[in-house]
Each structure stands twice: as structure tokens, then as C-alpha cells.
Amino acid sequence: MVIDDVIKFFQEIPPFQFLEARELRSIAEKVSMEFYPKGTVILRQDDPASDALRVIKKGGVKVSVRSEDGQEVIIDHRGEGDTFGLMSLIGKDEKQKTTVIAIEDTICYLMKKSQVLPVIETNPAFTEYFLQFHFSKYVDKTSRDMHAKSLFYGSSDHLLFTTPVGDIATKDVVTVTQDASIQEAAQEMSRNRISSLIIVDDNGLPVGIVTDRDLREKVVSRGRDVTDMVKDIMTLPMIRVDVKDYCFEAVLKMIKHNIHHILVIKDGRLKGVLTNHDLMMLQGTSPLSFAKDLESQQSVEGLVPVSTKINRVVGLLLKEGAKASNITKIIAELNDRLVRKVLEIAEAKFGKPPVPYCWISFGSEGRKEQTFKTDQDNAIIHGDTDSPALADQAKRYFAAFSLFVRDGLVRCGFPHCPADYMASNPRWCQPLSVWKQYFTSWVHTPNPEAVLRSLIFFDFRMLHGDERLAAELRSHLGSILKGQNIFLAQMAGVVIKNRPPLGFFKKFIVEKDGEHKNELNLKFRGIGPLVDIVRLFALESGVSETSTLERIEAMKGKHPSIDSSGDELAQAFEFITLLRIHHQVEQIEKGEEPDNFINPTRLSNLEKRILKESFQVISLLQDGLSDQYGPGMVGG
Image (cartoon, rainbow, N blue to C red; front, side):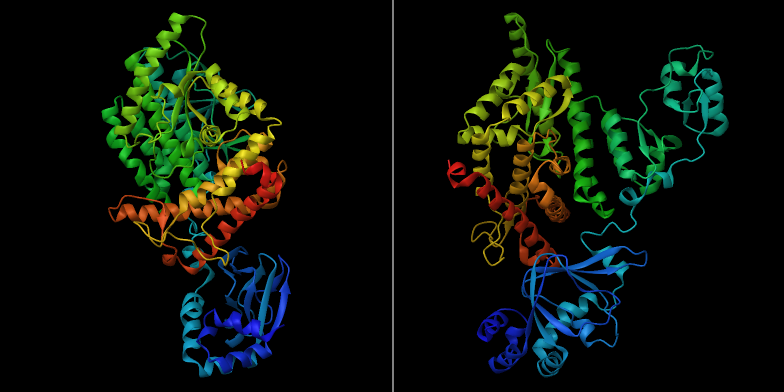
């Protein structure tokens, strides 16, 4: 170990930079160095207390505590220049208070207790640093406090995202057999004061459900004979969740299928019923209420005030401690419902379309990764026809139809796409055969424009209409991609160029001037390259999912980079997205227009550390792509 190298390192990090040159050299002459491979437990909670202050020269560690129920609670991540072990070193407790694990290959300088204590006693600036950045942050805080305040573990015991449906579902399920009469079923519901009744077969297995709505709409309003069998009015198919699923999963299914009751199953057997009322009681306000408001509207004018409420769900979910992916899923379901409602209103206005069609979305909407409303990114795939007259009729119908939908969505808060990637642009309202030609030409002739459009359109997802059209186009895409290494290399070249804003010495690269001086763009420089990498891997693997996290999950066991770094990618996506959502909510609460620019100096040490690690994961995978395809292939 060269002493001058140690001195140079210490001169650039607090609190050692506050020491006199003579004292710094004295410390450097006595420190030792240790190497910890990734995964090494350096210090363990309840083991003998640390006998040294460790300064991280290279690598990183996570600091955690074990809660009363045995769960690991991460309270910090530390990297180059950070220290650990001081509290155990100078405290009276003979046991280690935290567990410290190397999260990558890590090198540390070690200062023995006999070196540290005299420096603390004789250097106020040195002491003040540790009081401010360590003691005030960790001393006298229980693991429960850390759990509640951490950005990752903010959910604590909250509601939708931590409550299993089995905990709140009605356990004593009332059933009747499928050959019971409607009158008998209604009497059973009245006697038990319930709003739904499960219909079972001879083996006691659920085959349907009857609700008070069914009695109103299928019996009373139609004057139906109440001696008819109840199976004639029961609703199928029955949507179900497992007792262990969180209420969040039930909410998603109830919004998606427009239902207010859902079966709760355990080991294949009926164990309960969960209702919208149960969820409303659980949290006071449910995203289901917004879905219900949307469904009840019959005009664009009626949708406008309801659509403005959707953004409030984001704040609500943040308060519940939701993960970023949970927030975006619920927002996607509500936005999907809004778009479908506008489409249904358009169909009612213009009549039945002359040929089948499918409304698709792409971009963040296609990936179900929207936060607040973003630009419209949509298109129409419609059926082919051999009749010139029918083709002309379809062209005129969809031209008027798509303009109405575009303007309706604008009124509901979805602005025009600046690049005009909308169904109202005739280029993006085409029969299936033309869409196949588009995709084929982009893959076989991967010029810069073709690659750009591939990055946009290949994330398409069906929202409404004939899903067979979207499925056939997705199948066509999978078939034409096989063996297309030149196209994938060109796409890799685009992906590699958009690097995360992290410099060589792990310093954030921010805007040097302009409106966003000293800020960085979380969407385009953080989420953007991550999404692009995962999309490329998905195209390589033949995975059809469009959501980033769903793609990562689907590629496990199919793609080597996902097998080695998939979990880190997913965590990076969750963290950056949640950071972005928190930032935007704060802006909205201040009456500002939400954007994607943050000033990293305003982040906590923990947030800065994890953001840097997230950017590093992205950069390493970009480096791997460059090696995989070679500079000659990705440079075109």
C-alpha cells in the first residue's frame, strides 16, 4: 500500500479532508486494507461490536437491521468514501447493532479504535461531521421507524398493498345450488342481508354468482318468472383471487372486469367473497370509485370532470406506501377505462364500423407505465377487405372516428402527440396487411428512422376492439425478428448512445445551463435507457410482454443478462420511477406543472446512493451490449 495514495484518497472525502496534513499522514501510515468479495457479511447484528472504522475505497455495502418479526430492514446503502462501524466502535454496547454486507466486490481502509478516538477528541470538525451524518440519522431509531421512513419500505402495514384479501373478505359465504329458483335465491339474500350469492354445483364448487344488480336488471326490469332456475341469470365467468393475494390484485381485476364482487379461493376451494364495499371500508377511498364514476358517464362532457380525479389516485397510493409498479398498474387500468369509454361513445355516435378494428396504444401507455397523463400514443389496426367500396367506406369512417376520439382525449387531459403518432394521422390508421408491411420494412431495412419507429411501435398493446388483429400483428413481429442480427445491432447502437447521467467518478452529470441547470432528467436519461435495454432483450428472446417488469420476469431463464442482472434492473426501475412520481406529486401540490427534472443535491444520501447504483446497472448492461454486437455492428 502506497501511503501517498491513501493520503490522496482521504484528502477528497469528508471528514478526513478537514484534518491537517501531518495528522492525515499519521493516519495513513497506520491504516490497513481488507478486501470483501460480493456477498460477504462484514459485520453481523448481535455479534461482537466492530473494532475498527471502515472507509470504503471501492465497492459498496448495505446496512440493515433485523426487525422483531425476523424481517431484514435495509436502512442505508454506502459506497466509495463512506464509512461504517463507528457507532459500534465508540458505543458502550458490546454487540454489533447492524448487519453490513458487501453488495459488490469491496475494498476498505481500516482504522483501529486506538486511532479513531484521539482524532474525534481533538478535531471538532471531524466530530461534527459524524454527529450530523450518522448519529442524528440512526441513533435511538427503532427498526420500525426505519421501516416507515425508508423510500423502499414505506408501505409498513398499509392497506391495499400489504393486506391479503383473505383478511377482509367475507368468510361465511352463502350459497345455493344451481337448480334453486330465482325466488329462493332472492329470499336467501334477503334473509342474510347480503348483496351477492354464490351458485355451486353438486360438488359444492362455485359455478356462478348472482348479485342484487342481476335481480334488478335480469328479473325485475324484465318481468321474469321468479320460478325460473337461478343458474339462468347467474354471471359467468367468475373472477377469482387467492386468499394470499394482496387487495391490490383484487382491485386491478375488479376494475378490469367492471365487477363489484370477486371470489376468494384457497387450495381450489371457495373461502370467501370480496366486495367493493370491503375495499372501501379498508381504505376509505378506493380506485374502484373512480372506475365506477367513469363507467356511469355517457358523454365526453361527463368524462372530463371525472378524468381530472384520476391524478388524485397517485397521491392516495403514495400515502398508502405503494410500489411504483403498483401505482402505474392502477393508473394504467383507470386510463384504459377512460380511453375505452371515449371509444364506446364514438362507436355510439358513428355507428358500427364497416370492418373490425383494434385500438392500440404504445409508449408508456402501451407498457402500462404511465404516471400522470402523457401525450397520446395510439393507432388503429383494422381488418382487410377485397372490396374497394368497403375499403373506402372504412377509410372515411375511421378518419372521422379517430378525430372525434383524439379531441375527446384532449378534453380529458391527454394532449396531442407532438410527433403525430396518433390514430387520427392516416398513416397510423391502416389495415392489418399494411401494418405487417410497416413492421417488415423496419426490421429488414433498419435505417435510423425505422429503428426509431420500432422503439415506439413495438411496445404496442391492445386497448379495445378485435384482439385477434393485435395478436396476429404481434405474431408476425415475432416471426420476422428471427435471425435479424443486423436490425438488433442497429437497435443496440441507439440504446447504447443514451447513457445514464453518471460520470467516470460516479458523479451525477447535470445540465450546465438553461431552465434545468444543475438538474438531470429521470425519464429520458434514467427510465428511458433502462426500458430500451429491456425491450431489446425481449425482442432477442421472443418475449411478447410489453411492460418492462413483466418482460424481465418473462425472460428469466431465457436471457443470460436477465438471469445475471434482472433483479437489479427491476429494482432500478422501481426506484427511479418512484423517485419520479414523488417529485411530480410535490410539484403538483405546489401548483407547478409536473416534469422529470430533479436536482440530485436535494436527495438524501440514501436516495443518491441508490440512484447512482441504478445508473451503474444500466451502464454496465450498455457496455455488455457494445461487447455483444461489436463496435462495427452498432456504429451504423
